[in-house]
Structures are given as structure tokens and as C-alpha cells.
Image 1 (tube, helix red, strand yellow):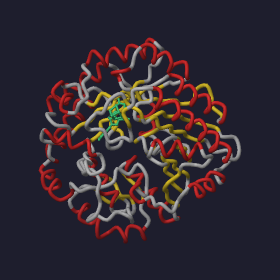
Image 2 (cartoon, helix red, strand yellow):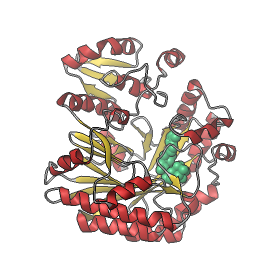
Image 3 (tube, helix red, strand yellow):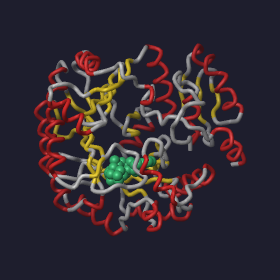
Image 4 (cartoon, protein in one colour):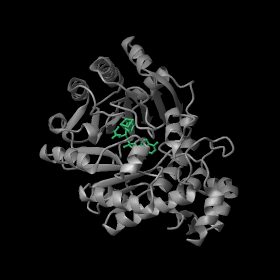
Length: 443
Ligand SMILES: C[S@@+](CC[C@H](N)C(=O)[O-])C[C@H]1O[C@@H](n2cnc3c(N)ncnc32)[C@H](O)[C@@H]1O
Ligand code: SF4
């Protein structure tokens, strides 16, 4: 622990979260719908697919929110959007050769469970009509517990959903007020009970550390309450404060935000409580029950990372539908227009809504392999040419004990260094320019 304060001074830098490589700020506008269509036509015919559908609407604004979302309280906004997503699914499916077998589906947002049932049904029907879905395909949905009742839980079960992630963030009342996300434990418990009654047993809980008014004690108490709801997985996200991108986050600054040392103390308190209860840490910010599929994937080295964070999904292609959604293909990334109206208009005119992306070079693919291995497994074999290029940035990190070399070519994070893995990963990132980068901080 004596290292920690020295490391905080030296290494608490803005670095990407590496949900992709190159990171999304390095996507360029010369990659458009034609490039995406060509990439889709090249998808290997037997390879399984993973599908992400973005539902941007929410009932109200949470001040900390970093997602692409819009407050909407009438179905007038939502049905034209669902119609566009259905059309996009048909257009994209028509461009993909072969069987189109799907291993996993994720509805994210915004709040996919907010808004009319007809929207979710139209999208799910289009997926079933255009893709090859097995009855047991992994199908997960993000839900806001404040609007999660028996009716929605039954609807999700009928759609074929088999995992629900609920947004809790923090159970402490003053913290909830400070971030404009008021939901007492009883509200969350009622939502979880509705899911269980509908037969939906696989539960993830999202929490955030680094919020105003949090202390190690309040965070430990939040973790205890979250565990009492018996989730299989808990995501413990570091609060990403990026008010230059999300102006409403200025509202969070009405109370002081914890500094880097306090953030690390909050994370450590949460981590301690979770591990005392038998949860296994997965990568930088997930925890899972030891018998959960994600804990097994982490143990056998098959864990993956995509735009939703850590995943057990191993499909080589992720297709993203809806405004702002990103597709990750073996050698390219493609992002849709983030504007809801312009996305709907483009799709209605019969064109794909890709606005930016990136082709990967063979060198990018090698570096992506290294960065994703470090993020998922906290170790990676580095080829000598890349090790030489990374040496100037990496040497001080090795010297300070954040990571170490084993068997000459294997770079391994030390236990104390693991929270700093994004700083180590950045040494292999050819696009990262520390002086100009604008990301959330490293811890
Ligand atoms: C799309 S939201 C989840 C679904 C639903 N909208 C809700 O809030 O309950 C996904 C998760 O992202 C996390 N999140 C949102 N903004 C964040 C931020 N600025 N920093 C860290 N995590 C954030 C929250 O934990 C949230 O539950
Ligand atoms: S955290 Fe969830 S509910 Fe809150 S504004 Fe963001 S997406 Fe909507």
C-alpha cells in the first residue's frame, strides 16, 4: 500500500477504458455506410454473431449518466424509433451471407424497459425473423428498477429474455439525492421479486463508485444490500466524469467529487466486501459468484471485452443496431449516427446509418490482442518488436512494480498493480497521445 500514494501522483492519467482498440475517439468519418456494407458481406458464413440493440429513451435524467439517452414520456417518440430499428435489422441481415447464427443478444440503453411493449416486441420479432436464434440464446436486457413491475417482468420472460441487469448505482439516500437517482432498497427489492416471479433468475446489478458523499462505509453497506438480492454478477463501475461530453454531469459537481486516493479507497472497500462474500473479481470492474459462467470464463481464459464491458460471449462479430450503436467486426468497427431523429430519417430513406468507424490494420489487430488480454486476463505474451517499441513508456511501470516480466516475453500485472491495468495497456496503444487525451481518470 505504501506504493499507492506515489502511483496516484504519477499514474492517475486520462486513459481509454479499452472496450475497443483503437478506442472510439480514434474512429474516423471516412468510414461510412459503404465500408460497413462491404465489411458485412465479408463476414464468415458459419461464425456465430452477437447482437446489441440500443434503446435510448429514459423516464428522467440521472445527473451522472454517461450513456446516449433522451428523456421521453410518450410512445410518440418510441414507436418510430422501433420501426427504424426493425428496418435496420432487415437491411443489415440482407447483407450478411450464410446462416446468421446468433449466440447472444443484449438490449441496452438508455432504458430498454421504458416505453411501450409494442416497440420491444417489434424489434424482437425482427431479430427472430432475420437471424437464427436458438431457444436458449443468451438474451440480456438492462432495466431501471424504478419502472420494473410484474407486467414488464412477464413481458421480458415472454420475449425470451434470460438475464436482466438492473441499475442500482448506490443504496445510500444522500448519495442517491446527489446524483438525482432516488430509489430506496424497497423499490429495487420489489423489482427483483417481480423478475423472480416471472422465472427470470439470472440477475446482474450495476453499481458505481466515485460519486459525491460516498464513504468506504456507505459503499460497503451498498454492497451488502446488493448481495442480499442474490445476484450472480455485480458490475462496479468507476464513475466516469466527462462534463465536456455530458454537460448535465456539471450538476454532480454541486457537491465535491472524491479525489483519486478516495476513489481507490471506495473501490477497495467494495472489493473487500465482495470477496469476503465469495465473489470473484473479473477484470477491472466486474465480480461474479464462483459458479457463474463469467467466473468460469475468467478462470479458463475465455473472457472477452466489448462495448458493454466484460462478457462471456466469444462471437467474432458484434452487430450494433439503433442510434449510436457500434458494430465490432473482425477487422473493422462501425458506429451509427448518435442523433435519434437523423438515425430514423437515414434508415427511412433506405440507407445504413453508419457515420464513422475504422478499418483495422494487421498491426492494430496485434495490439488489440495484447490490450484485450491485459484487460481480461491481466497478462499477455508480447512479441519482441512490440516490446521494444513499448519499452520507454513501460519501463517505469515495471520498475515501480505495477507489472513484471515473466519468462522474458510474458507481461503480468502484479496484484497491487491490477487497478492500473489501463495505464499499462496504454503503453501498447499506438493512437494514445497522453498530452491531448480526454478520458475519465485511470482509477
Ligand atoms: C444504460 S444504464 C442501465 C439501465 C438503466 N438505464 C438504469 O440506469 O437503470 C447502464 C449502466 O451504466 C452505468 N453508468 C451510467 N453512467 C455512468 C458513468 N458516468 N460512469 C460510470 N458508470 C455509468 C450505470 O451503472 C448504469 O446502470
Ligand atoms: S443511468 Fe440509466 S436511467 Fe439514468 S439517465 Fe442514464 S440510461 Fe437513463
